[in-house]
Length: 117
Image 1 (cartoon, rainbow, N blue to C red):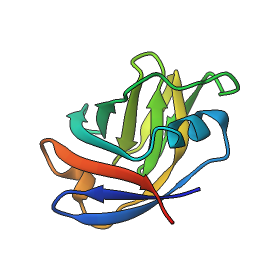
Image 2 (cartoon, helix red, strand yellow):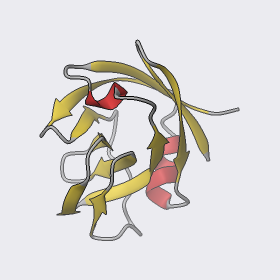
Image 3 (cartoon, rainbow, N blue to C red):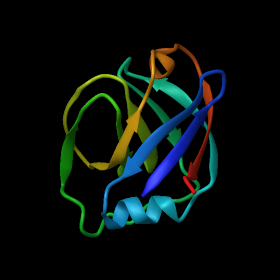
């Protein structure tokens, strides 16, 4: 499934969700308006309105820059702008294709995530 992630001040970005139950559950929340906050100089994170199903998800994963993930222990969305080591409870949902340094911008970013028509 194709998504559009509109980052205030930077415009729209394309993203693609994986074919997994967690990704489909995330898609069921769309459209979403969120505020992404900096976390560990590696990712932008935001709470979701509810926890996602991780029934068939692997125990964890390693993140690459551009990965759209769900961190099950905290119930939040994470968009990585740097590579990150393997973490238990990290579930990859898909991938964003950012242009420039939008995700590396310090401070909160308002985003809208929706399905692409």
